[in-house]
Amino acid sequence: MDYPALLNEITERIRQGQFRATMAVNAELLALYWDVGRIIAERRTAEGWGAKIIQRLARDIRNDLPRIKGFSERNLKRMFAFYNEYRRLQFGPTPLAQIAQGGSSPIGSTALARLPEGKYRMLALVVLLPWAHNAMLLGVKNHNARLWYMERTIEHGWSHDWLAAQIKSDLYARQGKATTNFATHLPAPQSALAQETLKDPYIFDFLTLEEPFRERELETGLVGYIEKFLLELGAGFSFVGRQYHLPVSDKDFYIDLLFYHIKLHCYVVIELKNDDFHPEYTGKVNFYCSVIDDILKTEQDNPTIGLILCKKADKVVAEYALRDVNKPIGISSYEITRTLPEHLKSSLPSVEEIEERLEEKT
Image 1 (cartoon, helix red, strand yellow):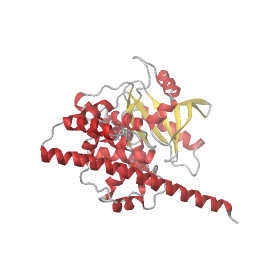
Image 2 (tube, helix red, strand yellow):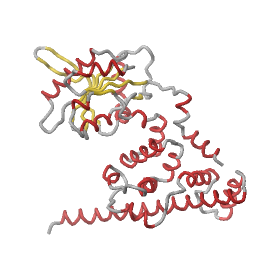
Image 3 (tube, one colour):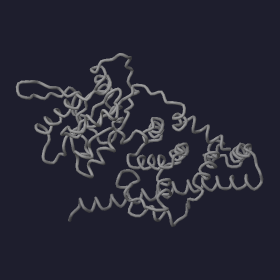
Image 4 (cartoon, helix red, strand yellow):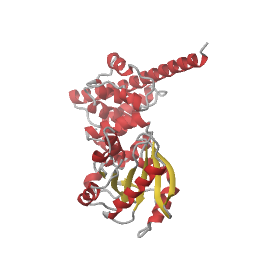
């Protein structure tokens, strides 16, 4: 008797059942909220009700159904906004069946890959996310950005607070924006994946460094907050060492920070600079990557990638500096504190700003 196989089959079936049950409950709740929003919207249009009607509804629902939670004035406004944003979606049994096909878990890249394409995809993304996440995403007006945040939330299992932090830091605009030579130094599709992995700029607002600071202070601060540093680097990075020793001939060299990326299957050399980018930095990182490829890289690993983090990098200068180096290298800037321009800040709302926008719609 192959008991382990039996156990695996049953536990997998239980997971699938739990996932589908949870998704069905979430879909039903979202359908209810969408429908409440629809009723309010249609009645307001037909009968000319003012904004005060939602306040009155919240009070009377609370009096008539005291044990039922979730229908506060704020949440009713969210339902109204939710309907207005997704009025073309169909929260019926057929779309739900399309979404549930083959799903075993609501989180992860596998679940994301199994989502339907076409007209049911947006519905699938909405249904897979809890109400609080959906309410948060209403503040993201750029359709492509919202879709990207939805997909990343499902893929990585982002919490509500983490999603809020990523929206506020404008992760969508920063992802994949580093200046690199990956397209010519890495094979496809690894080059595209590596490009998407790097950001520009990186936000290290968890540090408390004061200008001027030394590179070693930056390095010490990042390692001291390694968990937050890893979160900012993104999924897949595993910390190997700080001031990683490279003995070459009779000389000693030290890499600022060395990581291994699980998805890219390669080592990542990070060189920290407390000034603007200079072309000669690429030669040093190119050297480090060559040594790592010789002493650590195995046949199963992909070529080592270098990442130069500096205060500012002129894109044209960076592109010239990378053109003829032998190793795949990226160049990004970093910010210790971030003050957003007003025009950008308005498109990257905080939780409070999102709430205000939802209230304005009423």
